[in-house]
Length: 192
Image (cartoon, rainbow, N blue to C red; front, side, top):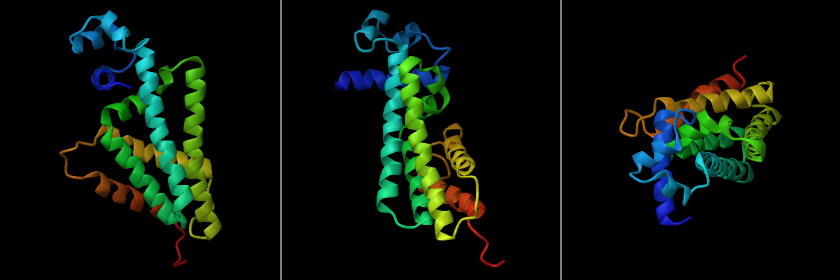
């Protein structure tokens, strides 16, 4: 992707983040970029093309992160802490894309939607694998792995709604607080 196309993509994502995919027209994006809609089409086939690129780039980052965690780290608690940390970093370093990814992926159509859903499932499976590792190690309570993974991801994804780069908490602090909270529900009480 050329630098110009990356710049147009980033500005387009900013517009989509503000208005939402359904409420944003190509004309809205072009106007915000101070260009004609036809000029925008010379860079992207459609508004959905922008959505697709955004969603798949984010999905690739998440998928690579959880694969790395499950390949490198050893115990379940360490894996979960690192997976949450990487997830928070990806979200906070790509706020516009992250909000579109989380909120608007359902607007993908056809094979794009099918492929994207498969990528989401692979990522979710990575978290289920971490939970299963914790159960196998005897440090996590027996639990519904799918429910646990979805709860973890829902908790972590919600930060795009309130995170401010200049706020009181940085990404590392958020990851630590979320990890501690999530682990308090998963870990066995060894005092029983």
